[in-house]
Structure formats: structure tokens, C-alpha cells
Amino acid sequence: MNDKYDFSEIEAKWQARWANEGTYEIPDFSDRPKYYCLEMFPYPSGKMHMGHVRNYSIGDVVARFKTMQGFHVLHPMGWDAFGLPAENAAIKHGGIHPADWTYANIDSMREQLKQIGISYDWSREVATCHPGYYKWTQWLFLQLYKNGLAYKKEAAVNWCPACSTVLANEQVKDGSCERCSTPVEKKELAQWFFKITDYAERLLKDLELLKGWPDKVKIMQEHWIGQSEGAEIEFQLAGQDEHIAVYTTRPDTIFGVTY
Image (cartoon, rainbow, N blue to C red; front, side, top):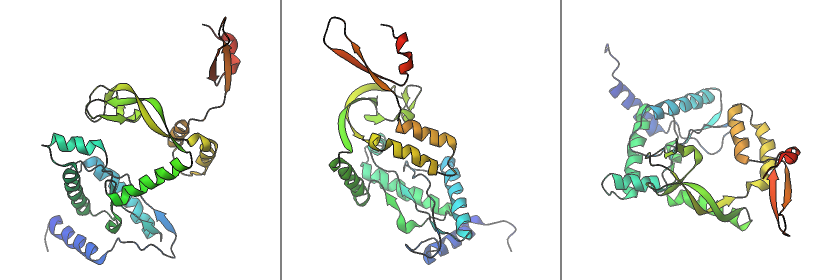
């Protein structure tokens, strides 16, 4: 008997057996209660780091714990692998084709995740850059558009001139792009919007149904939904027949208006 744990031999042996026997492959239907465990899909940038290990180890603990409790646990994995970041990274690394760069990184990171021994059902693996996946994103958008819930208008956006892409507010750090540190500009662009205002009240009420969600996350969702109650007040322009309409959530302060 070896005095030391030979992880390279022992873990490879059992990981091969799990793969051959489909230990973590889950059928679509079961009499057991269902549980869905999903960690965020990683961007296939090439190699995993300790942040990945931490996040996916936590998810694996939850998936295994719920399985031991008798749940039919769906624990899939996929890759957030679409858009300009992949193209820019491919250009940066010697003009490699973005598809070659992305799929090579997926292969590398998939192997690393398997070496960690996480209980993913790899038969359900998805990649957002695959036509079989994004065709459904396109289909969903068309349904929203046909029902008047997707519309286009000019709006100011956060623009990174280096990445040539729009950034969410969360992707702007101290006025710069979180990816490349280039100063971010404000730019007017034609943008697609979803008309969530038609469902704002329902979305807000349903936040109460999210038992176990941290309050700070629900508050963030409330702010994102952005519903507010107030009044629209019209200011007559002096000497003209026109007026300016202003919306305010504090009409009680109207007597303090100055020009």
C-alpha cells in the first residue's frame, strides 16, 4: 500500500469509470422530485483559474447534497462563447479564426473540469456560439418582436472603442472597460429594447415568490425593472403656445421649481 495518495492514478481511474458508466447522466423523467442546479456558464478564455474552481466546486457540493437527499438533480454545463470578445481574443493571439480559438479553449476547459471531478451531465453540454443553441435565441426574439415587445430606438450607450462593443454599466470600472481598460465613451446608437414595462407590476410582485434569494439581489432586480410612480407635469413656455412635459416622482415639490 502506498504511503502517499497518488491522485493522478486514482482520480483518473474513477473519472474514467464515471464517464464509461454515465454516472452523472440524468434521464429526462423520474419519479423523484426535481432539482435544477446551474452555475454561470464560463467564457472559454483558455485556462481555468481559482475563481472557476471555487464557483463550480460550490455548485457541485449543492448538486451532490440534493442528490443524496433523494432529488432528481439536473446539473448541466455550457459555454458563454458568443460575441466580439471571442473575435478580439482571436485577433490578439495571432489572427486565429475565432471559431478555432473558441472551440480549442472549450476543449481545454472541459478537460480541466473533468479532472476536478465535478458531477456534470456532459451529455447536455451546450455552447452559445453553436447554431443549434442560438437559433432558439433568435426564435424567442422573433416572438417578442411579432407581439410588439421588442422595439428599436436611439439611446446613449457605454461604448468601448477598443473592443468595438457596447458595455453594460456593470462592465465599466472607474470609467474604463473592464476587459481592456480603455476609457469608455458615451455614444448614441440604435438599440433594441424589450418592453418589460408592460409586465413591470407582475415582475415586481413575483419577486416576493423568490424564497431564499438574498435581499440585495432582489433589490437589484427591482432597480432593473425600474418601475416608479409619479406624475407628468406640463410647464407652459412664456409667450408661446407650447409646453414642456416633465415626469417626477415628487410632485409635492413642484412649488420649489426654479428656472
